[in-house]
Image 1: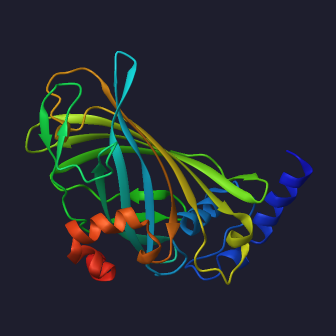
Image 2 (image 1 turned 45 degrees about the horizontal axis):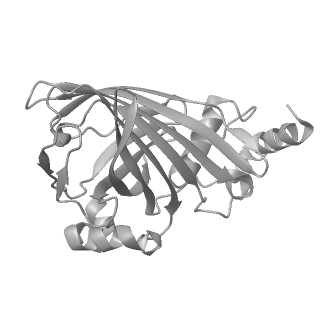
Length: 276
């Protein structure tokens, strides 16, 4: 560990009381690598220390990987809204609602029908409105219970790295592996998500900062989604996305809001009501 990184890690550990004074529960002791300390910083990076409404956006591209040949499918525009609620000194709940839109690689217009390059068939896309789900977190255990998708049973495994100090920023990587079992069809798919998050150290340590800026770089490696109608074609679905957390809906990208307010006006007219 370099002298600068050692100094910042020590600063994070000793300043943890000030940095998270506005969250519930006892303050962490020990170094930044302590799980209790990490899970409190996780909340500040991913969400908010209080019950403030917040938003995440990402944009990127979906590909198909067949015989190790990567084929672009379409661009993706992802948006989500979140709000935390303390349950007790150790646990908090996050209400979240998310949606994703697919757009044409050339025109940028919303895809309502897609020419599947793997099967040669035309696939119709419908976009379900964002619906609120709740996940429970623990400062001792991390994710305790994630929000299930309707009609889907999920077997999940979460892992993460410790916070790493690089220059003036704190970074960590989170990985989620899931097998989703679809009740209607009896089929299942394997999903692997990897995300790297970064936030400025100064904001993490400042007790007056209720909104900590953060960025996310995302990749997934999945079985074919049922909505792609791949049949028994072998292959893998791959995505890459990047984005950031913002404090207001108006800070979301214009191209996302243009689609969201046309397709799902009720959900985005009053995000607080959407979350319930």
